[in-house]
Length: 181
Image (cartoon, rainbow, N blue to C red):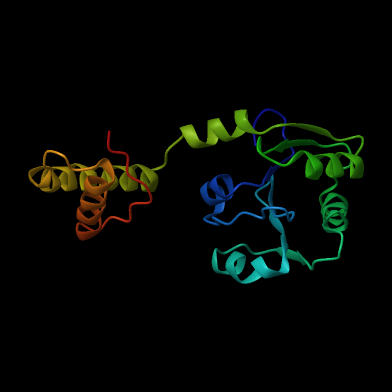
């Protein structure tokens, strides 16, 4: 990792999805994906997320049950990875109570926003990601060309969005959102 960061702590479905293909949130429960600068990974997750994390290919998942303290697993991670005085980049949307508990567990560590590290990672595109983006763009363009003749006066944005998303699916896409304005 860059910027002298020893480990990154991802907590949102968007960040974990980007980094590992795991698109689940913990909501009120602590669910984090930790990535070490050497590439090692570990997830701390509620037991109910184990199957999904395994399906996403997370190799090391440490689970906890309701009533147990997930920060104990974070302390174990800190011992295993020697993070007592580390620089930890933390997802910007990590809930304050969870971050404060982590800071209390590692008072000598420096916790900083992960946005700079994540922006650098997300800005760089490898060949597979570029191909996927080009394919998605071609599908979106072709879907728009196919949907445009179905646009009618008085039609709602939502109605046309459904048509457009249907065209994307027919062309092999998997749309997760559509903005029509």
